[in-house]
Length: 167
Image (cartoon, rainbow, N blue to C red; front, side):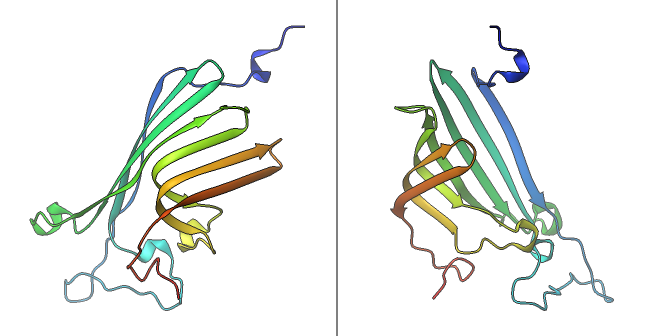
C-alpha cells in the first residue's frame, strides 16, 4: 500500500534556517526625555522591557534514521547605536548546542552545549513558571505518541542576575 505524501514524515535533508526575535522601545515624556518603565505589577509585560534582539542560526541534517541540529543564538540588548551614537550594546550567546534524534529510538533526542532550557511559558508576560534555566550541559528528551514528553538536563550555571536568581 502506498502512503500519500501528506502522511509521510517530513525530515530535514540539509537545511539552513535563520530566525529572529526582537523589540524596540519607543516612548518619551512631556519634556522630550526617554520614557521610564510603567511597570506597576510584580511580573510586568515583556513589552515594557528594554530594546532587545535575537538572531538564530540553525542547521538541520538527516543521516539515515538520525537527524541532527546545530543551533546558535546571538542576543543583543540596547541602547541601539543609532539612538545615542555609542558602541555600548551588550552581546550574549544564548544558545550554542548540537542535538541528535533517533539514536537508539526514533523518539529519543540528546543534546550537548549551552542552551536555554525552558518549558511552557507565558511569553508576553515574561514568565516561565518554575522552569527558566540557562545552562551549559547536556540533556535528553523522549516523546511517546505526542502525549507524553519526558525531559532531563544536567549542567551548570551561576546566575547572578535578579531576573534568574530566586531564593
